[in-house]
Image 1: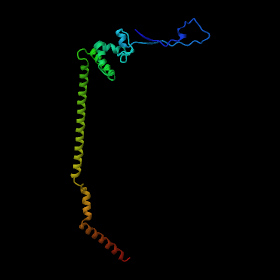
Image 2: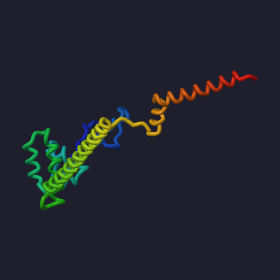
Image 3: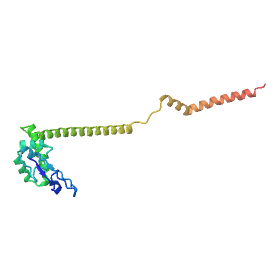
Length: 202
């Protein structure tokens, strides 16, 4: 059944449309307001009262919402649940009942508990994967630290670089006193020969 709210009747609205009063202008009539019942009252086929408890939570545009909850809990239990709760918590309670009823229809054996167990299983698997990844990261950090420490130790204990053997022999020969004296004598002999050749008669 539908609720109908009429506007305030005016003399022009009550008068017949054929009757016309030229002395007074006609006043437009107020439109009739038709309020559709809520989905719960429509499915239950009862009159939706002005202060229907189910109307705010089961609008007429969402009939499947009440059908699902009514199929599992029943209308009387839904009304009883809502009466026991404060008005601020009723919307959340209706959403919870609809979700649980949908889960019970999908899985008649476990219902909502089956979905919770499945989600908990996924959470445990993801936590195990996260712990494994964190352990691998810590292991890689330790390996990197050990590698850096080994490189530093090798650099600290490495001997100083040795010169090339051939270069070392050349440097030794040039810097030794014997080579200096022999070179000096060779230079003196050459100077004497040159001087003697200069003093020879032309």
